[in-house]
Length: 122
Image (cartoon, rainbow, N blue to C red; front, top):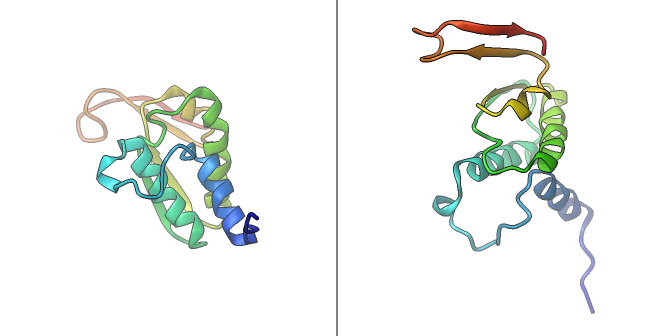
């Protein structure tokens, strides 16, 4: 007989799946994860703590995601933002840009020596 899942466990499981992390096993070491997987685990940690009034900075979160998984990631990012946080994403993928409220696109070396290519609402 299967043991029923608690509502809290179900919510965490749903967040894991929406972040595209359903393939990970519980015994997996953090240093064996890809950069994108590591960033999504970091985001999951922030989501489960219900933080408010924080800056959440994430780099290359879309690495390894399929186009289908972008929408789940978008919903999670919007949830973190709607809890009263500021979400800053540093990512090269054009797919993640379509979900942003505001985009800054830099060329070459970035803010210090690069030039603005695009700035403003997407």
